Length: 325
Ligand SMILES: Nc1ncnc2c1ncn2[C@@H]1O[C@H](COP(=O)(O)OP(=O)(O)OP(=O)(O)O)[C@@H](O)[C@H]1O
Image 1 (spheres, rainbow, N blue to C red):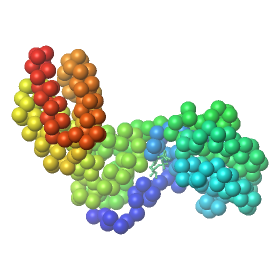
Image 2: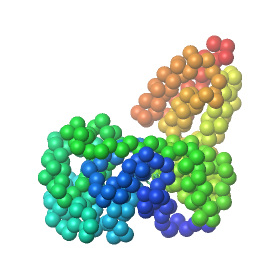
Image 3: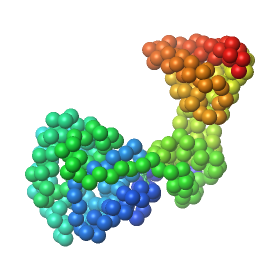
């Protein structure tokens, strides 16, 4: 079995070259053109977490500059750097450093660019112009709408999509086999459902679950601290059938066995309310979602988990009787 001290699998299995990136075909094809032309404009990478934005930036630099690409790349995080002045100084110094032998520019990678204020972004835009003869910027953002127009119009835009189920599962299978991890196929499905196409999350869950032994559906839900949807669904279905006592004992079981907080359970109920698996009249779904919002608010404010969630189940039981579900 794996040792806790070993490397994080997200790093170990981070693609080094553009050819190794999973999915994101449209992005990868366009980036390969830049490698071929040995030139590129400023780039803006946008999309949800864990879909390969940082990886693609590194892979592009790797394919352009070779194994030692890091000396030609300045990596900054807009949230860590104390303001645009620090960024300016670092870029200025970097621009003065050696350029690669066959390519006339170096790369500045700026992560979380959408966290910058619009004033800071204006200053960044000037910086991009000032050093455009020797640098190209790659800006990374989760929300491209937060990037000011003058920057957007100076960058080629790349949208990263959540990874497909098939690609995530294939990658997980590859990693599990390479690491000698024993797993259930259904566990990989469960990991995908939890990850929602975020490969970083998927790999991290796989690694954490592997420390418990065989990667089973149970192990997966245990490490993410979520009750298995089936059990939460069963609790709701029991209340909908009118059996409050049984629904409440399921609630206790979920909270004790999985060590979940009331807020986690509320969040999980929320997911279930909108899943097609749970059969209930639309009217009740709407009312339940509304009431759950209130319960969640009270929990965040520090109300007692058991009292609030039991109240929700009691309400659901009564409503289902009233509506004759
Ligand atoms: N398309 C992909 N192909 C293969 N592995 C991927 C892909 N996307 C993400 N990964 C895996 O997930 C890890 C995190 O990816 P990466 O840092 O590129 O995400 P990101 O999109 O930059 O996320 P964030 O917005 O949170 O910075 C990588 O180290 C890699 O192991």
